[in-house]
Image (cartoon, rainbow, N blue to C red; front, side, top):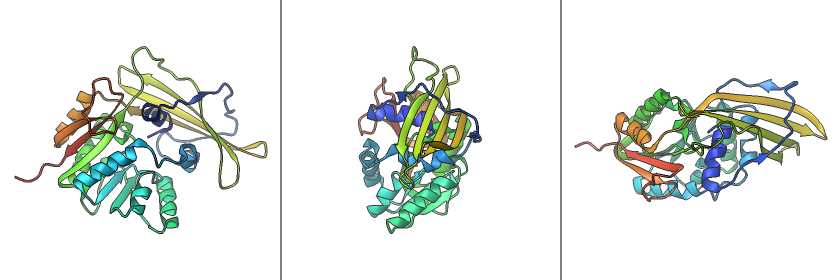
Length: 291
């Protein structure tokens, strides 16, 4: 998930919020990145921003789903390996796929350092074409929300085609905005942290704005790297739109239209049924077993 959208998602599950910051980095000398792709400072500082994610509430939730449906497992939108690396270390038979080459490079380097090279594929989920099927497929971090509705429908069909009969795909849907909330967050400080590799100070600001009539949000993010008091690098990433939000009925309808069976809506990262007021819920659907 992109910067601002993921911030909303994390706020919903971890009850944290980005801090306001009045001063914005100058755009002079900044590198403006294209609308798509996770690379540059967005990719290289991803893990610096998030720190230790071992205790995030979705990790045990997905493990329970894997325990129910079995292996092999596919992690869609694996990124730098937040879930995949831990599951790989636990001995699970798990592959990863992501559209970002830079994030996959970071993931593979981390996997090799822990002595378990990963099987990774660079593909968009709308065009998923992998050599084997899976019992469990995970779409963590609300990945279906990061493509247009037609792309989400196409991705669901491709994912279904990679499930073994009786296997399951599970993914969260989240969005923190509600009628009456501001449509534009304004610029907020996302993080300011030292970079372990060289001690440089890395700062990131994020802004998000919403279009309720279209159920989409837009986002941009600015990065600044400072070494010994001198700013040595700037980047500006923009996603317009960044993603789309769905009602529970819309999300389950996407699964149903793609051919999934036994569709369940779950409350947050729990096995309990979703509640009408949930800002974070998961949808799980199975590939029908042959008669």
